[in-house]
Image (cartoon, rainbow, N blue to C red; front, side):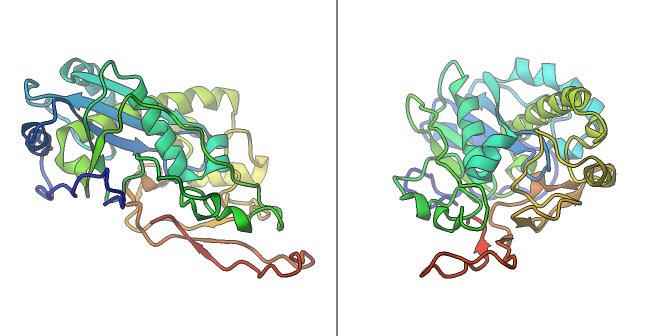
Length: 314
């Protein structure tokens, strides 16, 4: 659950499996919210391409979700594609937002998720009063005026960047909204809540389309199939071709020994059908550690201790 007071209380857990329903969305609507949005992200664990966030808005008048709606990772590509027009007709409103690889490198993955989510919300004709977010961490709401070194959004504190060659992280741009929605978090909401599952499908289809298009501009990495995840053919291409402009260069990439950070796969990751590590399902509070290297011959300025491992944002 997010740590700031604008977060709603953590949403009650629904069924562990089965067909997603509107039970939780309707509970929130009956509590006084006129519009409730389900939100989910894809591409968080990819090595290349954007991180993408989908949002689907419902109200009390909306009917049962179209047959076949599931978390996008449980559907084959053809089933996801077939659902898109039905989901767009069913929802009161929908949108998809992105944050690009250079923004992930510059601001960190949590801030990039926030950028993509708020960009999606900014496209809606009417802002929902409440957002139901998959996971147990509110990455959508801006942190209240945290000084830069204490900002949890980046991969490492600003005070520890620069002297050993790590690119300096900069604050992410703010995406203004007419009002800040209340955020409710729910673990496995993409499996339990129809609006969240629908958002995951719209986000997945849109990001997959982008990666297929970018595969034509950056051939050889197999993005037509692996969509930028860590599939074996993607790793082999990185060793053979090196990185391109679509790679997240502050991440540890196969065959790129000089990368400044080691990014370990999150707990709970499941395999992509093409053997990629599909980290979309990983919870944000998984035990991931980013390690800053200590290369020989790179002394730190006087009085500055050598940095230790930095835990990922909670």
